[in-house]
Image 1: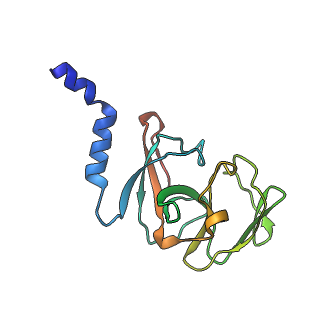
Image 2: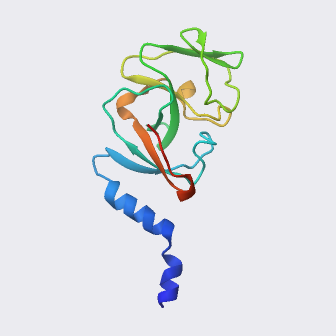
Image 3: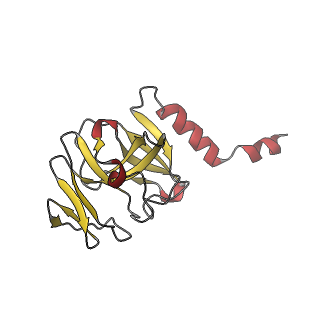
Amino acid sequence: MLKTLGRFINLKTIILVAVYVFLKKEDKSITTYEIKEESMSPELLPEDYVVAVKTNEPFNRGDMVIFENSEKSISVVKRVLGLPGETVSASDGELKINGNAINDSWAKTVTDDFIDCKVNENEVFVLGDQRRLSTSDSRTLGAIDSSQCLKVKYRYWPYQRIKAYE
């Protein structure tokens, strides 16, 4: 019987239960999240698990955030590229902030052209790293209310890929 129980309980299960119990709060200030899509690869892969926190600090370009796509009723993870007061667009495969091309080292595929999107106060413009695979980003949803975003702080599973994001 002990051997059978050992087959059901493994290291992954123990870690996931511990993280859930100790970090999950009802006020959603800390949450765990399983990556389910490839839009952030190779940084975050399907079946990676991350911890995200609610923060009052402004987001920086390059931060990864989790937010709710209310149209599809799903949570998604994307990278912050546009900050409050900026205008974001893309042409000729280049991401532009206020009309100037930026060093977009996070993009793993070409960014399709899109028209100007003004980022208002308390908003951020987000895209996935795999632009061709990315859906539910600011190209379709517009700028995202930053108060609805949680900042990804740690990838804790798989244990070979543990990483802190600061």
